[in-house]
Length: 180
Image (cartoon, rainbow, N blue to C red):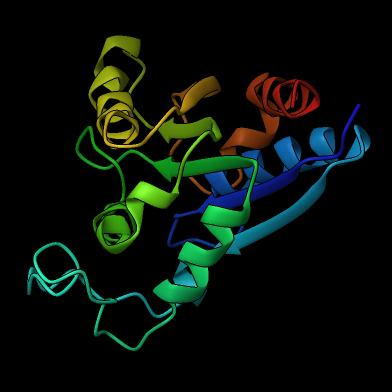
């Protein structure tokens, strides 16, 4: 089996939050299979909102913003596997994840042929309510060339910090990591 480059994008504003802990379990499983892992905690990065200036889309220029997004985009393009993790806020992805997705505009055509995994946590216990969040991720994939949705963890009924630790979702994330 060939080792893959796995990039984990954790978008929770709480380091060690429920979705972040699931990322760590996914990483543990993928690392056991011999893959090269890098985790980016988006809160640690300075990523500004897309300005809609048209430099990239209308004039073919690099994004004029001088922040950490260029570095993150390079890593997304270089990765074989991208894991996108988000807590669910009002049945959608976090602002940090949405900002990252919007800023992919300048180079999204270079994010091709990737395997994607998704990790989502929410306080609600109605699974169908998480479908809206999943649709945000799928809408991003619809804009990419040859993406493959490889798996996801839908962790329901977790809100308070560390609540995830006593759930079967930890094992689910670990096992999903082993499928990479």
